[in-house]
Amino acid sequence: MSTTILHLIPFDPSHVPTNTKQQTTKALLNILFPSKEIELVITEETIFIDSGQYFTNVHCHLCGDVVKIEIWQDAMDAAYNTRFRDLTFTTPCCSRETSLNSLDYKMPSGFSRFMIIIRDLETELSIQNLQQIEKAMGCHLREIWTRY
Ligand SMILES: [Zn+2]
Image (cartoon, rainbow, N blue to C red; front, side, top):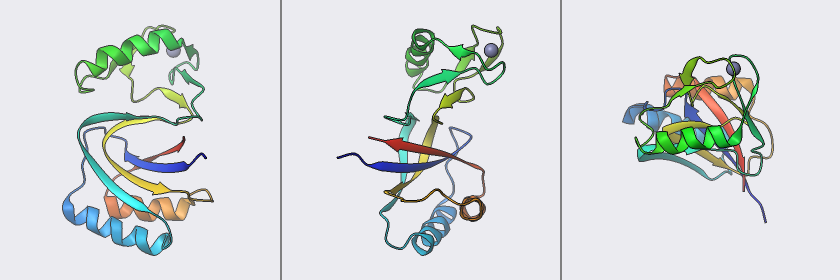
């Protein structure tokens, strides 16, 4: 049986909201999604949150070309050796320096130390709800839908 999990992460991989902001956010989430299992998770090190079965490929966000999966995997291995502190990536297609966190993942993926996890949400997150959560968190959030 597969499950769908919505992860909400800050765009800045190292950003962890304050305790107060976390509590405000948790309280808001319990009101917005009263019957859902919700967790706020902080990890010791930066991790990569992917879309699981939704993952198809990676595109360059600068020129739109597909990044060969072997090239991306090598860059991920190198970044992993820095515990994902150094996410520098030089695009093979247009030779520009960017971050692995900025690439255009299909479906969206990203790096973070902090995440909100909402399980088995049947509907998409509305813009209004996302904005409310961002306000409580004090930062913009990336939506990562993961299917296992
Ligand atoms: Zn490119």
